[in-house]
Length: 546
Image (cartoon, rainbow, N blue to C red; front, side, top):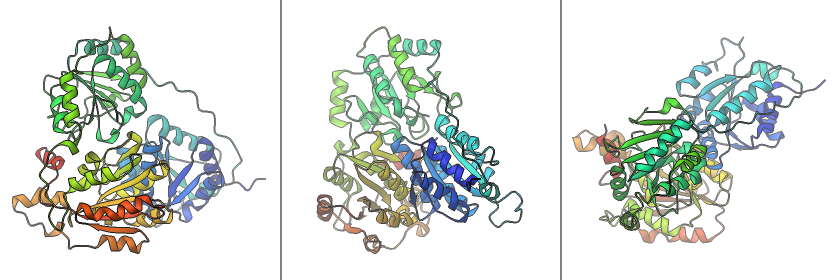
């Protein structure tokens, strides 16, 4: 007779399915399943808050390409994690949340909440381990839903079921799944459009990050320019015809070229208000095509003329084969010169707003871009500041940029950087935060320090919730609720055992240069006192869409 329980069997099954790292906060309800995962080879990362665990697992999945895994206590452990779960679910991140749950008979448990309803409310998929007899199948089903459908799954583990005796069993083999190519009719229709297009532009989103080479090859054959959504930034890094990010982050040159396109093809991109700049970036007479695995995505955010249902990679290959030949189209010498002169925000002239006590946020980002090694992974929190690290700092590829912004919550930056760092051990991890988000998520500064991660944490500190200041202040509304006295964030960071520096001008970055040259055995925190006289350019654009 085996001493194995369902909790142990679930952990063993997940490890056999490929779970290599699990993030969480352990309580009595998830103690045994977490230990079983560790016993079977998974590495456990103990965060200081369940919200940090969910966000770090999301970022780990985005950067590594492997499913994320989270473990939480029943009730309050799950509710603490819900913002991170919502971000992952809205981003279609493959992730499994192991959520302990009171026994069905424990009707008066203080921990009882409707965990299925919580999952559904934020767009996650609820599932459950029902019994010892079904534990392996239930666990495998949740894992494969996450992987195949790119969904965030909350797998509830009732305490009485977890404690039940179980027999060892292997998960059933996963049937081979071929990524679906679009239909012949759809391939022909898209090839016909591209054969006639004079100014085609491709916009790739997270749904196409595994198909970057195929989409780029097709673009080269039909003469299309390349762009990405913000979440897929870096996918075409190094390509001469890369416009970088489409939407609110687009440079003036990129915006001009996208607006002049006669055909726009979205590859695994939703063309939401950010990517399309509230629809203004795509001209009314532009033919719009959307390629996506999910037909429900067609036209959900922007009107389309053709929906192509299929995986981006094999669909791009099929369309390339159906073209009549190579075309120059939008890849002219004139366009090449425009891109050379202004494809990067740091090349766009600006008036420096810095003074004796504040650094211009653009100047800070450019100085860091020059200072840091090219092999980096930049993780960005939400807020007025976020365009500066996102667009003034380069990234080596799409694995070098992590942008948890689908739910637009501030406070996710440190946990995002934690997950991205663990997925990129050979790169310098950079966390880009505002002061509000940094303090909201500061619990994970302890985790980052404890793990010995040589992370650079940059705080664009305007002593306020800057988006609200710039949104409501110009209309004469009182803003005392969203501004704060000066806080010495460098001193707080030193209290956590980090190196830290206060930056008011470029010369103050000298300690960062020294830290970069050293062993980087502790995180370095930059408390940058930024000039805050105006909203960022992307925020001005966003306000026009309100």
